[in-house]
Length: 53
Image (cartoon, rainbow, N blue to C red; front, side, top):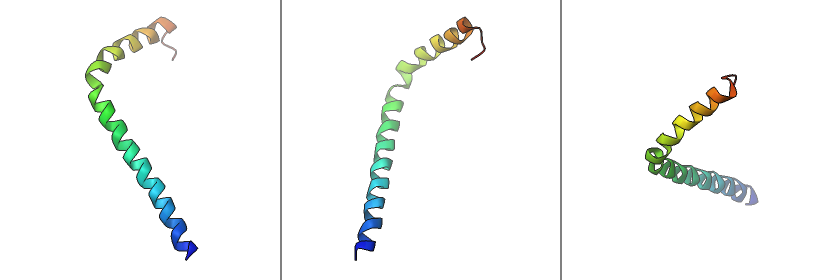
C-alpha cells in the first residue's frame, strides 16, 4: 500500500513543478515587451566588458 502512495507523491511534486513552469512561462510572455529593451543594455554591457563574456 505505501509503495503506491510514494509514487503518487512524486507525481504530485512533478505536477506542481509543471504548474510552476507554466506560470513562469506566462510571466515571461507578459514581460517580453518590457524585457525587449533590457536585452539591448545587456549587449552594451558585454561590449563594455571587452566582449570576452
